[in-house]
Length: 398
Ligand SMILES: *Cc1c(COP(=O)(O)O)cnc(C)c1O
View 1 (cartoon, rainbow, N blue to C red):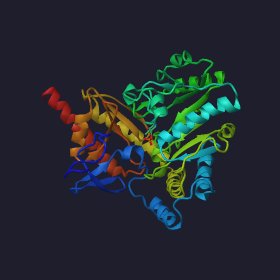
View 2 (view 1 turned 30 degrees about the vertical axis):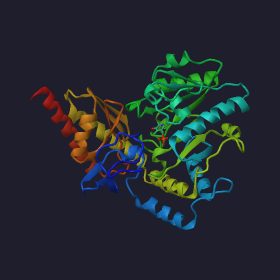
View 3 (view 1 turned 90 degrees about the vertical axis):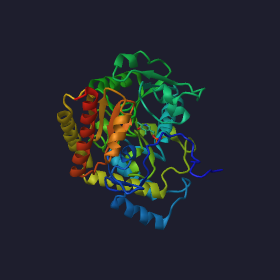
View 4 (view 1 turned 90 degrees about the horizontal axis):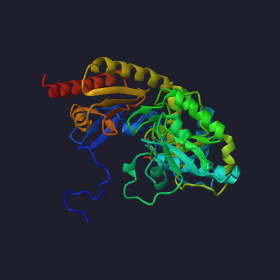
């Protein structure tokens, strides 16, 4: 039942008082006609901006042909997209699903099944990290190293233990004869835009080799060009055994993927895993158009350049600002760590026509489209820095 003006939705999300109704490139408009520069891309999803022509064309073409048949039949668009992914990554096999959490579920399941059905060592435990984020399903919220996502959802499944990020000894201390894998984000996105330390990643990869553990990379936020490489593992000179994608992969159309090295493929034999909506003709058409555009236009390189430019600009404009503790990130996944909760600052930035989002309580996260025009980026950075200066002057009474 609905009363006039009362939402029938679960109150799951604390929403900003903004209703966006139209998007084009890096611009968004609300229901009052106010225009915004988009520095959040629907949380790193609209990688090519809003309504990109290349994706729209392929989607419309596919909408005219066929929407859904299910995975009991061959789907050429899946083969095409999987080929593009394996040709451009260290992976040899791809499983398609619809969301990030579902991709991580597949990663958790294949790691366990490989241990239990291929290696026959009965292992099941996965080491993840404090402050990580891996999703909202029961298994992926258990994998997540943040208590707030777990409250009220007990009992949680067994088999997850938590190490400290960037601390190799804390990982080493958790390895035992039940451990089958280590799962990490190369940049903890939701946890506050924290990049992994290169030495730590190298030591972690060695530790995995030494103990025969699978290295699982959650690239749901860092993948498809976001960090300045097509996949974030390329920054670190390591190759994960398994990695997961979602967010930017479909350019705004829902799709997730779990990718692995070829030796894991036999663990997912016929009937072992599945998803009704995994890799529909439409979703894979959107993702193929998105990914090929990212690759063909060297958008990872563009993200690297614009990211470096952005960090430099923020560093110079915010130097000495008492509200700013640090500026960090890689490519176009950038965080401004504030000395206080960032919510009020973010609301003011929204009022001034720029859409940014938080990452944890104190961080302002900047995740624009990989295609954001230079002028839009400059204008957005002016606003962000302007608000931070203004807020700093009110607290210091200047
Ligand atoms: C967003 C995100 C997820 C969850 O993806 P959903 O599509 O919301 O299920 C998992 N891991 C990371 C690193 C993410 O950023």
